[in-house]
Image (cartoon, rainbow, N blue to C red):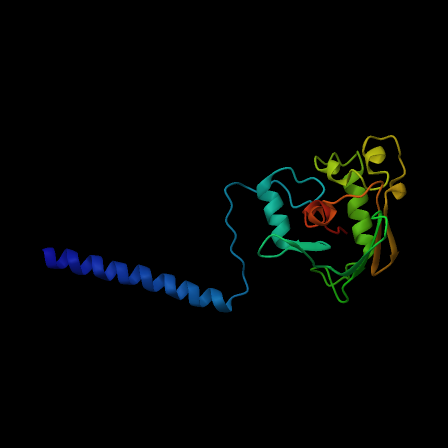
Length: 186
């Protein structure tokens, strides 16, 4: 009887370990991402996200001008270069060539303008609109004092060039630009 139990345990262990190895080998060739979270996603909208689970999913599936590297330092991502004015109030980003949405449409500077305007628009009710504080007219627009979204300090100079104008230097701007609230939208 002990021999049967011992053999059953060994065989069960071998089967369990073997099936795990098969999954690992299969995962190496499969291009599917398996994602597990502690709660359901509430949204995949970067402008209206309010909790960490959705924020993590948007960050993992999207991209912005910057992305944090393995050590947590912001590195250029959708932007290939950035020029910062001497007074620290104007940033001009050149987008990488060939970046596309999942449907194949090109990602343009106007997609950033649209997403940023949408986030600060008081009608959107974004809880993270405050992150835009210090960008020209962001506070006035979000408070409803300035109703013209085009007054926001973000402009598409052309399809590949985005210009951001600040009201004051923002040393945290590069770190903030890694957040999904600053991702392009279309």
